[in-house]
Length: 417
Image (tube, rainbow, N blue to C red):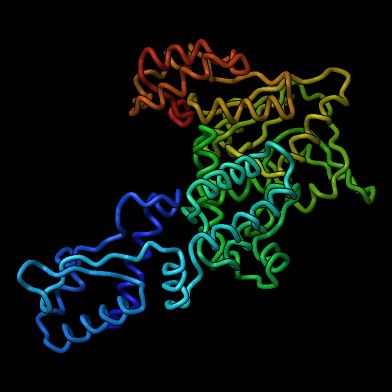
């Protein structure tokens, strides 16, 4: 074993986790107890290993990097404690001896890197807030913690991706994004993706949001593996930039439009549409087409979250409704739970102010009360109570009170079962 390397690594680890590292005030030694270090004890039965270990200690002490003490009555035989010389010059010499960059220096480099990329973000975006908070923690701890690494290149690749995703307003396939950012079409998928996803999941949790599947998280940022397909059913026509008009009125059992077509669409024309219903769940959307959709209605599969390109599609549909003599009514159907309320709220606030809930009321919850799921955590109930304090969720306050009273939430699939 390389005892010098192992000893200095362990002692510097203690140093970087000490208050002395942060404050510069020494309150206690950065010290190892030999009897508690299994990697030492396992080798001291060997005479040759013990000799190498003790020789290493002697050299490091002579160079002023460490000091040590013997067990009582065992001087020259059994080591008791080993501690790091707290002089900064000695500590710097330890790092140099190991050929590694001091943790504080790595932290400073990351801090400046984050500050650079943060400047490319609009204020108060979720990514900007995350990076601001991380910089504060980095400055206080002077250590690189969760989400980033000791690898400067990896850190820069993570930041490049976060900034790109936050500023992205179009659909982009994963490998094309990766090629554009890194000059390597597989770099994102093979190395950067897990780190970026862990940050995006953390941001959602910090915002009190439900955390969807990884593909949906990326979809919200416009990042897809393949072009997106959007489903709907109703009497509409789509006008493209080249003058072509695609008529969907005869496709009464359901129609599809891909993201590339949406990019080239300039207008949606509606004729005789009195109601537009957005439906979160795929099974409920299919059931709705077969059982409830009327001929003067447009049903749209929402999918729970929507990407920038799907957002563009929804806006085209909304603007198309304005083009009729009589504007349609707009509804949205989701689960009766926090996630469903937030999906509704996002669509209403960002796009359709007159949006109304469908089958998300007190009466529906009462009817399907025996089919509802029990709320398992106090934190979920606290989040529900927080929505009661938010006037933007006023249309759900009645059903939220029922949910709290019964301790239940209702998935929309239960209604069609």
